[in-house]
Picture 1 (spheres, chains in turn purple, yellow):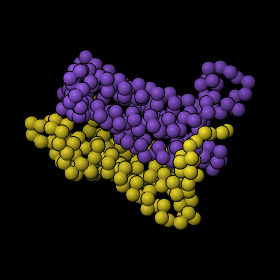
Picture 2: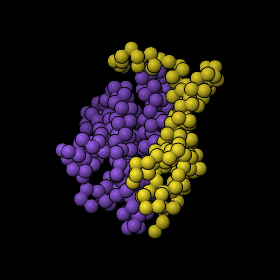
Picture 3: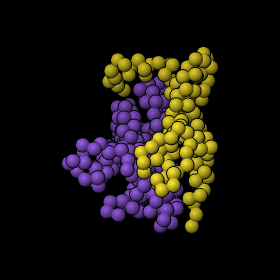
Picture 4: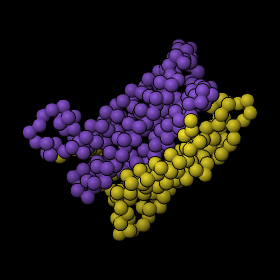
Amino acid sequence: MGIIPDFLLDYISVSTYWTILFTIHALLAVALLGALSHQAMSVLMPARARAGQAGIVTRFSTVHGPAYAAAVCVLWIVTFFFGAWIYTKYRMYVRIPIEQAGYWKTQGVFELKEHYATIGLGLLPIYWYMWKNARDAAYDSARKWLTVVLTVMCWYIFLAGHIVNNVRGFGS
Amino acid sequence: MSTTTVPGTASLAASATFRTFATVFAIATPIIYVVCELQNWPLFTYHPGTNRLDLGWAPPVRNEGPAMHWYGWTATTLLASAALGVLATLLPQSVTRRIPLSLVWIVPVAMLPVLIYSLKFFWRW
């Protein structure tokens, strides 16, 4: 079931293989979530608007936004790739029991997650372009709200995956 | 504010052609994806139980597990959006500069209620 390089199974079990892939997917998602959250805070609460403050919120949002753009694009694509890879396992061994148990809303929440993971891919080129032209004021508003939209999408995708894992994840 | 970029990415970031492509790609992706999902237009169907691919939409095969269409919707969307993006680069800049940049975030947000409605099968108790 699914795409598994045969030589790997000489060293690890099938279960370990999928666990490793899922863990990598989850760790990449955490990194992406962190990067986007920093960047979104930096556009929603610019440091100059809070001069004099030096609390944790200030430090969280005082990041150099353009430096995150390429990392966010790479992380979204790589996280998407790992998610698409483990999706085969999910479809066979997670979704079917979820449906049998009647957790329809949980499945619906996951469906929306996959939709927005793909839509996010389409937004990455212009997101990267706008951040690479961060000095151009013409892009300020669109860049700000595009970053916020991508961040909200990322949080939703992350939490939906977490919910599904809670319903039927490791050890189920 | 200074950014460190390698020459290749710097030229891409300064390219009006890439800007046009990326803008149209971003606007087209949510719309085409929603159409693909609603009309069920995957480029291919993957059968995870047997590792088989069928071109276009295919139903699940009896006793061979489910059929997956999401990969196919994604492929259709990215290819069609990229094609539109390339076509847009052929238009004069006087035209492409008039595309409102705000659409790149408004369109994905506007697609949310449509996608939620398309999943109405799952919103039941």
